[in-house]
Picture (tube, rainbow, N blue to C red):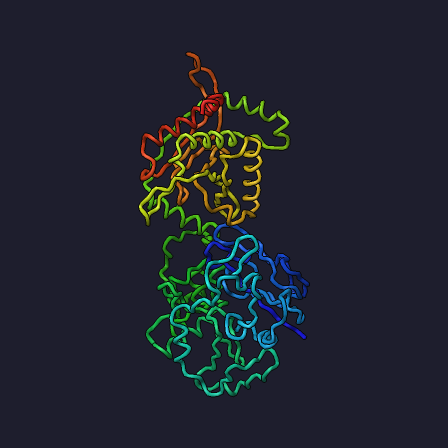
Length: 524
């Protein structure tokens, strides 16, 4: 007997509210086991694989690759075949819940299909909710998210149309579909428990989520527009029209709908994109703000969205100061060649970044206040007991800053191995969220792009970031003569609330001294 379980998108432990499904790793009809990866999801920081909490057969993929899904929304249905999908015992209410259509996945009967205690998405000791393996449980109670806007109240107050079969299951054979003749006067609307459910059909009449929300809002309060739940009005348009707008790069928020009740139509979108029929009236001004011929719109989401928000918060919170230093690193480059030939570094990449990282760690040991953060609530400076060294890495999904935990305790070979693993994992998009939190100071290597220097922005929560430029041969005064030397530029940005000019200058000078003469490290 079929026993359908629905797996909801979990919070991976970083307080996220949504994630984009990058790709499915299973297909309908596949047999899966507990902890087998189901799909790859991009969160605000990285791409992670979601393991299955059930064992069974995949019966439905509720969202396509490329869709952004809110945390708590069902994404896949698995038939456990009555075996509980790895859950201890059985669930008497599971068959009834399994018969519910996908539109009812977010609440009501689907609640009976929650994973058992200890499994992903299920309850954990202390009223917490288990999340991804390795990320630990959330410290919140397991409960449904509240409905957005006022749609819950609108549904409660909206009058039911004559002939509506409340609770009828038209998709599972539990009841016959009402004849089209029953749809007279007021359209028949069966409201799904979650406003984000897919459109439902009643007697050949398809009502999109947005049109349904608009009709219900009109019944409860005709003057209240549909909103996103954050105070910003959400344009009224059916899903096919939204997809067309996304494909054509049209922002629905700037359109005025020509349909009934202000609903945006396909013609409105095509007119805005310049594809309307000749002589058709335009629904928007002729020039869209910020638009140019051949312009391309790139959605800001995932890692890029998080990076943008973090940089704005940092730039307008911490007073930045940047200092620069040109350093003769000829001796360090010669040492690099000798170190790379030693057996301890066999198979390891000995790059200039390794020596910059070591120099920064030694300088931070001498000036521990640089390795600090500002506690706004307590109005205190928190001097960290260890250095979690962040390395800014460019990835196809945007800039990420994973960090090496307690890097100061590592030997030079161990640090080389840690840096290599960190950068390779980041570029592959496999960095775990835990590896990108808790950083205390950062290095950004702009030299790999052939850039000399820059003015880096602090990683939020940190007090200093060091930019390392390219190492190139330049004329330099050495022993009273102008000779070619290997030179690099260092740029240190720091939070002036924590690090004053003297401390920042001394710290940068120490890093430069260690790179100019690596033997200086013996004096640290």
